[in-house]
Length: 113
Length: 115
Figure 1: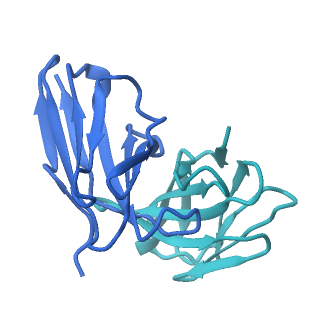
Figure 2: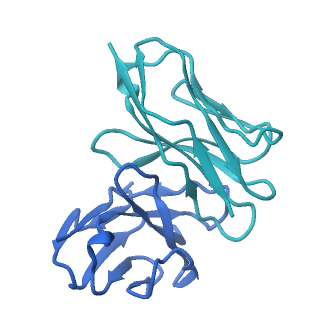
């Protein structure tokens, strides 16, 4: 079946540090890939997505590239801010059989001033 | 415009009771999804609707769980004979269509606590 594996957390960084959160997936064909973010006290929000191989999704300074050869969709940001502190979820939606999302376990990011 | 809304935001019940959780999707969205999120975990799929019909209910854990969407808009998730293990945040999402590439927009969730 489909699965998503995220790097183990939590992650603690200083402001302006470089961020990478690793995400790998298992799925047949070409799933769509997503990063969702959950800020404290808020609901899940889409951060970015990519729907085909080699696509790069980007938003709010975050980027992730759909790598079919390594089945990965790592999230990066060049300079994090305190306001980026949140839980980040990698997710996939299958190419076939409907559009249910399969999520990773989430990575808690804390950015200190 | 209005996002996905869910009511109640919190529900505390006793073991064995029946509960209903409501989801009001974004207007015009034909697809509606239910997920369950336990503490420290990612959301897990329960069921999704395309219009009024349940297109995939393979995530429902057992026959105590049931969901309806009679008019293709509002949906209700129903849990019979609740158990302590049902305690979680129940999330609803909607998307314009039920295509894999479509963005799902999530509601704030209903936190269910079974005592």
